[in-house]
Each structure stands twice: as C-alpha cells, then as structure tokens.
Image (cartoon, rainbow, N blue to C red):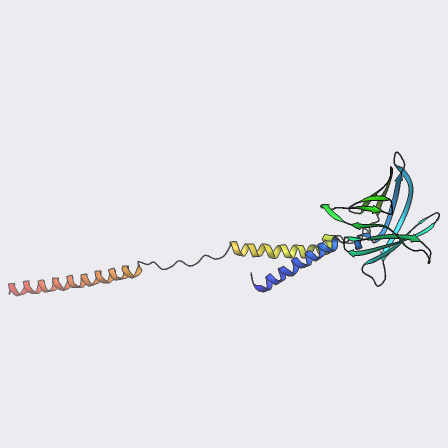
Length: 232
C-alpha cells in the first residue's frame, strides 16, 4: 500500500470519526419542532399537550432559543451548552423584563448504543430523569410524592438525509482501502528460490568427469599405437 493510499485512508477514517462525534451532539439534536404530552395524576393521564419550537441563536454555536405556548401565554426557552452533551435549560415568560429561570442542568451519558440518560435537580425542590432514544425523549420529574412525565416527540423531516446518506460513501471508501491493504499483505509475491548450494560442486564434478574421459581416451590411443608397433 503506497503512501498516498494510506493518507487517503487516514483522511476517510478521520472524517468518519468527526461525523460520529457530530452525531452525538445534543446541540443539533434539540433543534426542531417537538410535540410534548404531559402526564400527571394517579394513575398517570395526559393533562396537557404543547408544542416546542427550538432553533439556533443567530451568531452563536452554543446557545439555542425556543418557545412554547399555553392559554396563559408564551414561554421562552434558552438552552446553553458547555459542550456537545452538557448544558443548562432555562425558561421565562415572554416579557422583556423577565429573568430566565434555570430549570435543570443536563449531562447526557450514553448508557447503551442509542440510549442517553441525564438526571439531577429540577428547579429548587424536585429531581428529574431524562431518557433520550432516537427522535423521542421522556422526562420524569418527582417532587415529594408527585410525579409528572413529559413525553417528547420530534418532528422528523423525511427529506433530511440520514447519517449513512451523508457519510456512507466515506465509510465505503475507507473500508475498501483497508480491505485492499489487508489483501496486498496476504497476497505478497513469494521470494525467488535461492540458487542451490551444490551447483558449484556439481559443475566441478562434471569437469572432473570430462577430464577423466579425456585421459582415458588418450590412454587408449597410446595403447593402440603400441600394439601397432609390435605388429610391425
């Protein structure tokens, strides 16, 4: 495998790793339209239904803005991120003089493939647990003996490309290069056989045999000459 192929393979793997990191960012995950069903009471029943709209703040890559509406008015949402999986969720009335209230801080942990969990304090006197799976979230808030459950469902645009549609070609290209690299290693040409060590000895033996034959022929010739002289 030449240096150029190795460099291309490394670039593909780096791009895939960056894409995987991007897919785990909740900054992008929270952006969009959400429908929320609120369950409360004993037994739990739907007590409220709202729609959240969350978008990126202009000029910022760490803050999201949004809102939801009820009969009593609009509530503003502000989500501030410290990194891709950690941040703070604020809400406030739609009033210029209103001070945003911090509802909870989240720190998403990937317990299993595709399931993220965060838990902690909610407001000043409650606790929460948030479970994320695909385009859905479920938040359970407990205060004393009272339990409320928020069921979030994200509106997914079917025209939006999936992860594999975005980065599938890079994955295939990287896998193809790795396959060729492994194949070239397993099918390396065999080394040419070394010349036999006994070849010089064979050549020497052949030369000795030829010399012996020459001496034998000369001896026969002399013997024939001697017989001819005796006959004369």
